[in-house]
Image (cartoon, rainbow, N blue to C red; front, side, top):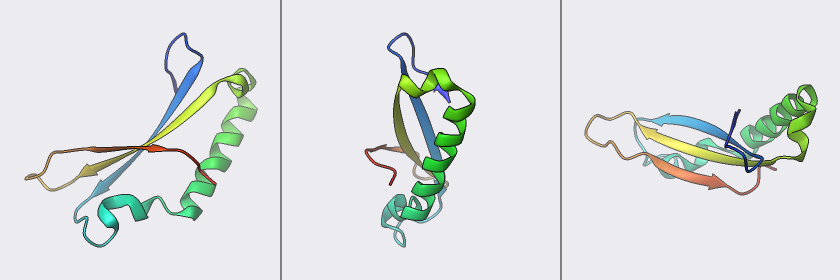
Length: 83
């Protein structure tokens, strides 16, 4: 996790590569509830090792990166809730 600067905010970026978006609502289904729970658990573990981070705001973003060379647009999605 990288600090976002002096505003005491951290950002976590989840990157998913997509070949074809039709099957999974263009990548939205890939960040399913089980994956969100695992991510929340990983954050809890990371914060346990880094206690100073507990008081900082954490923003989670999902980046859906197309693997097709014809489409280069990365979709950025703010994740409001993990669980």
